Amino acid sequence: MDLDTFSSLVERPDESARRAAEERWQQLDKPPAGLGRLEELGSWLASVQGASPVRPLTAAKVLLFAGDHGVAALGVSRPAPAGRTAQRVHAVLDGTAPVAVLARRYGAEVRVVDLAVDADAGEFPAEVVQHRVRRGSGRIDIEDALSPQEAVRAFRAGMAVADEEADAGTDLVLLGDLGAGSTTVAAVLVGALCGTDAAAVTGRGSGIDDHVWMVKCSTVRDALRRARPVLGDQLALLATVGGADFAAITGFLLQAAARKLPVVLDGTVSAACALVAQRIAFRAPEWWRAGQSSGEPAQAKAYDRLTLTPLQSLDVSMGEGVGALLALPLLQAASDTLADPADTLLVTTATRAPQEPPRLPSAAELLGRL
Image 1 (cartoon, rainbow, N blue to C red):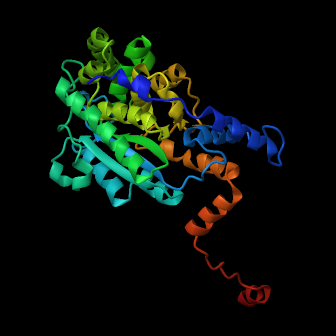
Image 2 (image 1 turned 60 degrees about the vertical axis):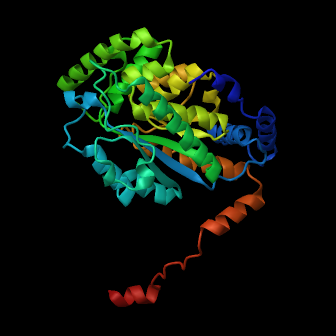
Image 3 (image 1 turned 30 degrees about the vertical axis):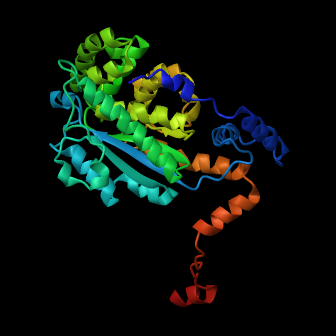
């Protein structure tokens, strides 16, 4: 698979649309830079849409790539019952997970893509498992996560998902992940690509104590030794110390940039994959925004290398796209403010059904109750 083609396929966002948006901001009745970062977000949306006025965001999608990792068996995550990832997938599909609840509140759809959940494929609907590569991934401190062929399959699966979303009319992807042991894998990728030691990229993940942190740190150290010899080959790196979900997210990010589909990154996992993708196509990060800072050191190092500034600092460390989703209202506010007023009116009229206001008791009724 020739990854070098992405360098020519990924174009820069439309600079003329960005300049037109900046001029439009100046024409609005407000103090200069009075809307702060909303102005930068609106100009970015104009550039990735290639349009000014901006089109209101009406088809945002939360996209969760799911996969388990062999390093979870070492206890690098908060103790959890076997099958925890499968349970989380079911919670998302049932609409009870936090990301599903928030997505309903903000008017976004949710899609789960199972790449390597350690569960029987029959547990999930066919549309969830259609891109599955394997059941779980290898323990990266002592063995490869994937075979080279599986890494290519996962990468291509991510590309296919990007094509599916672009063809379906999705106008913004809020990217997340589901999986046990994933922050350990992310720390290894960021540490390898940034040239840092294990302690500098190992965080608390799911809320681990000092003892578990030391186990996690030694696991990251051992995996880093295996990662360094393959740093020059991104697919080999993903096969050696990544996983099927990581390879798929990387492929998705690159193909989304090629298809001009903007993406909001979530936690450490999406940040690590973005760092890998940047090695393949240096212009790709211009199509992404960082939703929030989770407090994980690996995420902070990745964003620093990508020159992405998180939109919020909420310390949401659970993954599952929650941090990216919480940035959606900011992006909607930026697009609505910069859009043609007629377009905004059409969107709000179509999406907000009229509701009867609650009847409040009169003063006489209140007095009569005393």
